[in-house]
Image (cartoon, rainbow, N blue to C red; front, side, top):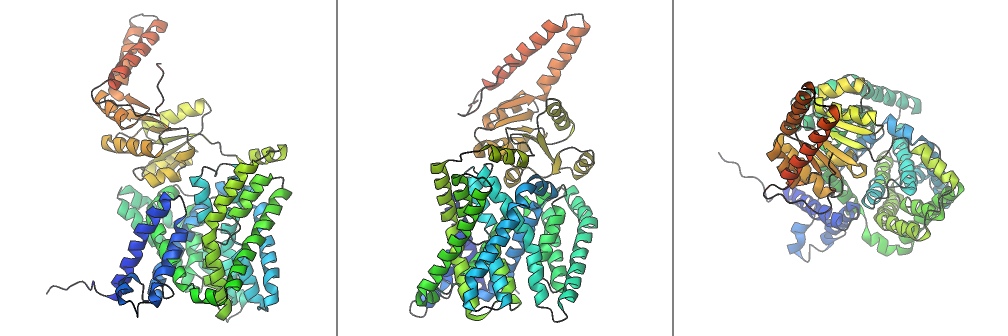
Length: 591
């Protein structure tokens, strides 16, 4: 008997609204170069009970555009939070923290503690309990990692002093999330604070031990299959298992996923996991933000407009002013201090996570919780605008770099920029890497063979595991700051697609590709390669060079003639039918 899908059900309609909103918000706000965080919150307000839902009784035709049951979205919203913290954990590698330790462990604690103390002083006259006061102060002291990094990356400011300073502070905030969540959870346990900490430590120990012993073999087996869906399944198993262990110990599942992410940050699978979960992270985080928007009580704002607007202005002004003073105190210019201060002035999407944890354990409740949610939600919506204002002010004031600032940057920039990405680290890729090392040129290699990656990583080579057919993986590898990309894989169709995608996203990047023969090289040039090196041509030239030398021809004339023939063959390939070089490519000099 056929069973009809309940397409008319309320749950299906709600899910269609969420997916439709994601399909509209993400591309629309990406085109505007604005974080979709604002869009998702606005959608939540619009389709929620305080938006269109408030008029469906008089205008029933609008009912399909509303979400009738906000709580039905909560499981998906919680999964979005878990994915966000899992991704944050993947960014907290020991190498990254070590590289930016001067900012992370000097400026980071000063910002977090200073802003929390100032926020507590601001909230003290309202007669809150000690627990609510501390929870709200810590919640409001955080700044948005997702919005901040998106603004810095899209504007090309991530590598500047303002970008690195903001990123270091945000990195410390991400590190601080786990102990803050643990503290919230410990206050809710009836068995006592120390007993709760012991149970929490045991659960985290299980996650850490499992991440060290069980997860690498699991990911290795998934990678060996070369099937993306199995690797995705392995990543979801890790996510769900770590969250379940934390939940069983009375902790937020987010603590478990954050811990698992931190443990995986040191593995060779980190970048591939990031690329695998990225689409789901964006969608499910969007569900979380829609859920938050639906809870924003707009009639409450209308009843107390000065209280809500005053709270938003007070928090953003207080944080922005303190961070500006801290930046100036540490020798930053007025432009850099203004940019960082405005970028970090608002609260964060993780503020909403801490807020949810605090309300879940009863630290914040009632009217205080409603008011705080309004202030956090509307302040978060202002973050992109404040960040853009900060960029404008910095461009007007300039950076005014001092000797102290230059010395600080030099101590932070331990990892050289402008390196080369080698895609495919087999025989050819390793030889290219060896030549780059011989000339002191930094590089990062990526390969899809997990066994090769493990072996070479143990030998000290800069190689990570990943499937570069995914464009988001290349972005995660930092292709935007690379000076060149070398493609050494031997899959013809994959090479053509990769070259085309890289050229479309990075029109001025040097792209050197390995070609099978002259026809394939011509195809790669048409796709956008700066240089394509055909294997058959190179092997023929090497054979000719060897036989000429063996016949007694002097080495100098042989090398000169080989170079001339190579240049002639390359010119012939580039003049082949339908060969069109796109503007912006750099001309290749003859060798």
